[in-house]
Image (cartoon, rainbow, N blue to C red; front, side, top):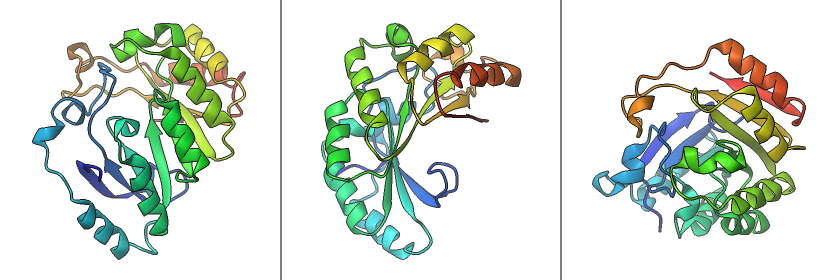
Length: 232
């Protein structure tokens, strides 16, 4: 069983090209300062849990209206029951899209090999050598590189993406990330949004970079990736 700590019943943006719902799983092995989901990461036990039985009853009621289920967090791959949960979603007739930070390539490999996931979105938060500055924990960058390669060669649909953190991102930052994901099908830049819920105090009022900066980053990334987009 997995603990579902949130449910967005309909989304038109989380799963590209599909009408989907999004489930939020608790816990994360990162402590990114700009994260808006601090309650899921640090105090998930205090949040109400949606029973799996209730969730799958909801899915059954949405058959023919919802095409897929987006699984996000937190970091879903630290949830032990994730493969079994994905299988139940697939067996119910829905597509599965997974959001991940890429720290558990063994879990990603199992999901891919057992055909339990149809789309993976992996965050590439910074150049590999700068990762711990952003994740705020010691990070096994070898596993990140392994996940990038695994996803890129998986044969399933995928994207890499990055939130444009104002105090980290420059053209040189983007060039370094581009080299890490070189040859990938798709990369999205997501505009940073300050939030009073951000884990790091400085990110609660920080100004986002202007749109022109994101456009510049897009031009840099197109040297390395087939399709580049910007999400506001």
